[in-house]
Structure formats: structure tokens, C-alpha cells
Length: 310
Image: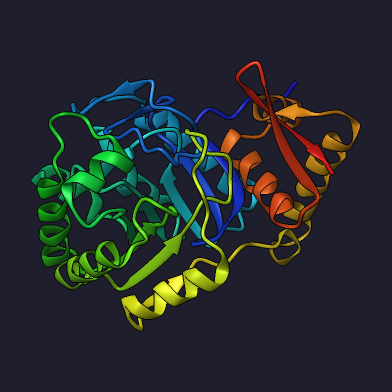
């Protein structure tokens, strides 16, 4: 058996970043939030303290090995199983990646720790930072994102505004829309005003296209997403769904492996990840695509979600 990857996953097709090599630097599922829509599931450890979670040298050694094999990727993306800014060595990891390759680095973050100067400095080493804004006020923020008690909506907005003032790179602000939570006229209006304060280079609208932490999270249809995008301004876009064939034979082949597995028997996310030796997040990418195509559906049994072909 080959040596199992510890910190890298993919490259996987990303609806925001093209073909992306993921770098996972936080244990599952350590986060400052417990979002109702999280694709990875409920937060098992809410945290606000930054820690040295992974050995930087091991992360960089693994990347060095992948680069030596010939890596094709549009971005190296630091995201993974929790909130990456909780890693105390985030800045060192980004700096180390940049010494090894010219592939641009992106950080996907919920943005809750950007009120801290050290976190802003670490994130500023990246080429693109993709933070989140899912609410127009504290009450909705609490309802959707369920933050640590030390995280407030006011701190979130202050951190995003301060980061924009200091960061010359690209900020792509993701707004995750849930029917019945943050899609009424008042919420959209408040989010629009906050976007004006934050001044991102792009606003990207997302909705639930994968299994979520809580049941009853309703996705928006394409028509409503486009209508809200028009209300939020010209730099707002609906994040496009990916097609595996667009990303080349490796990704297309992996997608077919997932579908072949589900044709044989219903599988959980962990079954697929273990069976194909891929990361849970990578497995989710393919499942969500096939769900959108109507060829895979899901059912819950004893608290576990199983996927099967229709």
C-alpha cells in the first residue's frame, strides 16, 4: 500500500477556484462556528484559541512530493476540515508554499477571526482570501452560523472591513443563502449595505447543493439566486456548478469511480472516501454534481446519510 496523504487532498474541481489542491491544516471539525448548512457536519469542538495543529515541515514535504510528480492545479487552497485561521502557523504555511511553487494560494475562511491583527497578517500572505457573510444582523448570524460565545457579528464585520483596508490581493466574499433564513427583502438589503463597507472584489452567491449539518436547509433555485445577484450589484455572481469533464480525464475518471461504487450499493460519505482513498470533501464534490444531475439521491438510516443511484 502507498503512503496515505495526511494534509493534501485533490486536486478537486471547485465551483469557485477551478481545479484546486486542498491543504487541510485543522482537525475535523474544529471551528469558531457551527453553521446549519455545513457540508462536513456539526462542529465537534468550538474554539477561538489559535494552536499549532500540524507540523509545517510535514505539510510542505508532502506538497514538495506532489509537485515533483507534476501537479496541475489552478489554486492551492487552504481550507479543509475546520476553520484554517485557527492554525497558529497559517502564515508560515502560506509563505512555505509560495517558496515551493508559483501556483496561487487561496484561503477559504469564515472570516470570524479577522478582527485579530495576527490573523489578518497571516491571511494577507495569500493571493485570494474567500471569507463568508451569511447574515445582515446579529440575530440572523446567531441563527445560521451559531458562533462561539466570544464571536460577535460586530467583530466579524469589523474584521472584514479592516482586512480590506490592509490587503491588496483579491477578496471574494461568499454569501450562503438559505430559503427562510436570509432571503427576505430586509436581509438582502442589509447584506448589500455591508458589502459596500467590506468592498470585496467579488461577491459569490452559494446555496445548499450538498448534504448539510441540519435537516430542512432549503436551497434556492437558479432563478431566485440570479434575482438576488442582480440586487446585490454588478460584481455579484452565482457560483457555477462544476462538470467533471471540464477538468480533465483524472477528475472525470474519479467521478466515474464514485458513480460506479454507488451503482453497486448505497454508500455513506465515509464509505466512498475510504473505498476510493479520497478525502471526504473530494467525495462531496462528486456526489453534489451527480445529485444536481438527478442520478444520485440520498436517504437517512440510523442517523447516517447514504447515497445511491436513482
